[in-house]
Length: 483
Image (cartoon, rainbow, N blue to C red):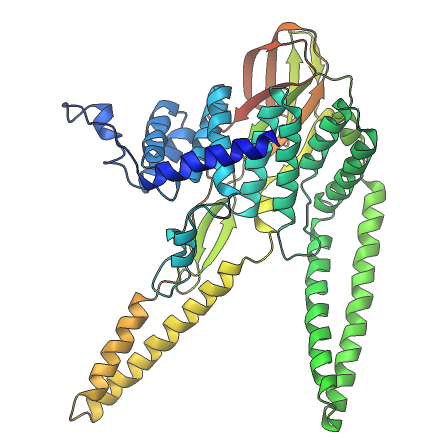
């Protein structure tokens, strides 16, 4: 109840501030940072510079740019808050990170926010990028994860659980039958919270779903899951086609109907085989790391964020498709030395929380169909313009063909099918998390990242303060720069 009231109050404040932004007065010195990074002088393209600054370790410059962009209070405010949240978390500014993530959380999950922009982006001549940024499903999932983790660290268990459940729902909002809620981490955190609140039955249910999600997204199963999903999609199409043909009751379609039945039978056999292979793999996959993760005796979670998250860009003839790519990060595992004595090795880490996999396996979005239609319309009108232009050169005494060609060409040029390439670029490539029991007080942690040969490629020493609570949370980012 508290979270709903808090969300409503903050949402009203945020949306009203978007409508009536107030800009800070510029300093007299034209070369000052206040002028250079003021909302008035910053543009969306400056975000790329901020991103490069972050991955180069220039956090101060990145913060100035993202803070200035957020102060514009435009339709991308949730994106800038997420970027700042990641930056603050890397810097150890936990309170600032929570505030930024929460502000983004409220807008990303508010169906009424940016309503006018949403409707405007559906038109043929408007871009999808004019709508309010609310993030792809995987971005909503991990925004909910960070909000949940930071509330959990504050011992606000009820609202933390609400955030984890929200992340699970965001992950379920896809078309793919097999990709629903396969982020095991969200179920595991829900399990931990339920155990802390002595809700054993609910904890058992969440852990069962965590295990299913872990199997589903495990690297050993990913190709099989993808194949099975493709077969299920084909089966769905063939079954609908069969129903349409049978409904016509036309004797001439008998051969077509029999062929469809044969294809459906083959698909059902292949689907069962893929399912059996997945089950065989499941029996070989260890879930010990899941059991260790929810150990109620542990009082500390160490979350190691690695590398650079999914990169989203436009492709297609008219840029109507949005696809993801990955910038590889060489670290495959981590070890932790506590107080120069106790060493924790890789086997204890909860791994395979792969953001690129989550981003690239999401189901189709409604906007994709609209963008495809825009692209087809743009091509058709351009083709008509070309034909009319050619005709006008052969015979057009009254200039009718020329005028129609010009009009069709103008419509084609104005049609905007470009896909939305905005993305939360400061997300990590993967999260590796370990659950530990640490004594109350100050500890020194040396975290070592190593590559596939076992060679240490990054190392960082941090001092942490462990309270007497059961929910200490420590974040450490490895991004490929000296830290």
